[in-house]
Image (cartoon, rainbow, N blue to C red; front, side, top):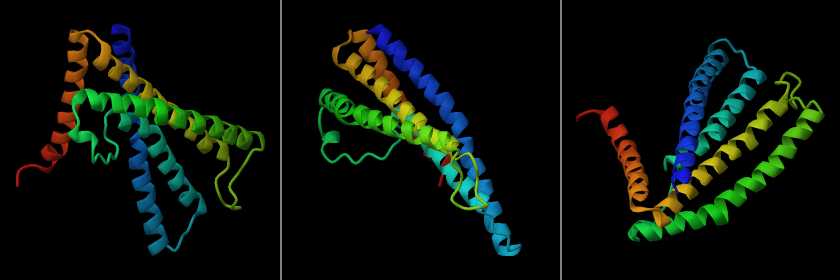
Length: 197
C-alpha cells in the first residue's frame, strides 16, 4: 500500500509541474486575444493565423490542465446524492467511477485521437484556410497527451481510494489528511485573494 501512495504522490507532483507550465498558455491566450481585438478594431487587421493560434492555446490550456484539475478536485462536480453519503461510500463511488467511466473513456479518446494525430502528420495537414497555420498535427497531438494526463490522474485517484479503503490506518490517515488539506487550500485561496470586505 505504501507503493500506491508513493506512486500517487509522484503522479500528483508530475501533473502539478505540467499544470503550472501549461497554465502559461492562459496568459499567452489573453495577450493574443487582446492583440487580435485591438488590431481588428483600430487597425482593421484581421489575421487567420492569430485566430487559429487562439484556439490552439485553448486546446493546450484545457487538455494539459484537465488531469491536474481532476486530481485536485477542481473540476465541476454536481453532487446531489454523493455529498450526503458517508466517506467510505463516497470512496467506493469514486473508485467505481474511475474504473467504469473515467479510465475507459480516456482509453477510447487516446486510441482514436492518436490515430487522428498520426494521420494528420502523415498527410502534412495544414489549415483549411490559405492563410492559416501549418503543422496541424502538433495541436492534434495535444489531445491524446491531455487525456493521457487525465488517465494518470485517474490512476492516482484509484490508488488513493484503494489505500483509503483497504490500507493500514497510518497510510489511510496520511492520504485523508493530504486530501483534506488540499480541499481546505482550494476553498480558502479565493477568499484570501478577495481580501476583507
